[in-house]
Length: 209
Image (cartoon, rainbow, N blue to C red; front, side):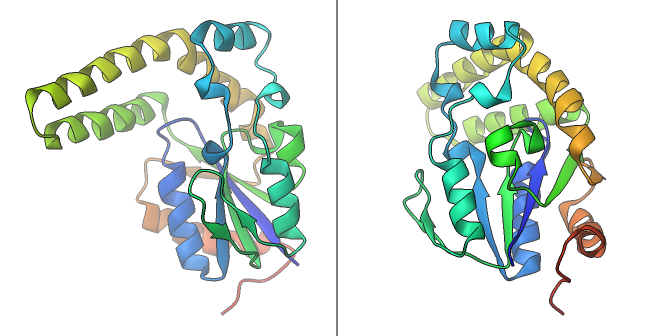
């Protein structure tokens, strides 16, 4: 049987890093990422703001094919990642990186174990900013840097209008459904060690030696 282990947390919490490290540590695991399916971030800001004002119903977020792919992986079938074009093969463990956890009805019903990365909002924001300012410094030429700075200015504006509210909603709606809550400020290697100890307590299958 397949166990779907979801990793959730606010933007910048370290979901991607932890999900990759956990999949590597498990060894017999496949990975699937919500960001490769969701289409909400492609919508105009005013449309996203209306969604927020309506209470941000997670089941209204378009993620074509994601629920089907989770179901097929659990059934033992391979799927093709729509963003990378790479085949994702079934495995005893599926590490599912998702912002919504069990609060998204369609995909949440496939989750067997939810891990919440409890990262302070200021730390998460600082990580996002540092990633982009570092990229700006690596880019050649003034134009590349100024383009990154324009992105940063837009991101901060959207953060104040939208992302901060979404982070609060995540904490209210997603975190309570987690069996395991880990400290997102700790080193990913330490967190993986903790998860390898904790997962057998909640999974219907033991970890392979």
